[in-house]
Image (tube, rainbow, N blue to C red; front, side, top):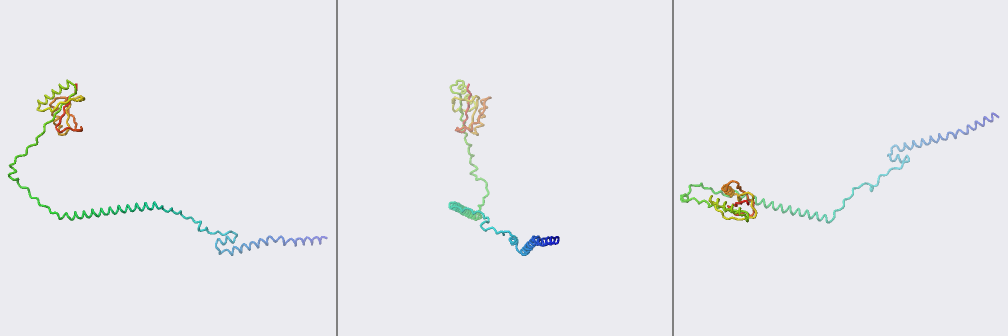
Length: 239
């Protein structure tokens, strides 16, 4: 019985051994296949290696997908016509300026050529004056016009009228003639002698000095309309 039982156990171990070796045999075969595949793809490009290893090969992007710069919008016909008109106007201006410059250069050249052709007339030295000129009498001095003195006092003022008569008498004593006496609604608060032209300033100062202290001269050269030269106005204050 034992011998028979031992034989059965030995037969079981002998029959189970091949099935236990199958995984190892499969692993060896798989390793050989992978090694052969790697060896075969060793000289191929990387994309081929990846494809051989089960990877999908990468394809280059299509030409239509490449970036292109945006095209500029074509100029409108109105803008093109306006630009051409502006350029034509500038060309006309430039041509006109060039013609003017050419004309000026021609005139300058002509003037420069004419300069040496001019002959200078010798100037004779001045000799002694002819005897008839020496005997001529000197020209008389211009006659100076007399001063035109006008007195002014306040309207309807007896005191002003009396003062005007007194001033007129003092001027006559000094050899000065009073041309007229007038009244005005407004008079200055102080006695003044007015002149209207620069050449009459000295005469106004002399008259103020003749009338005594308190009299001043007043510059009325900016007054419009100006009276004639040699006009002196004597203003008597109201009282």
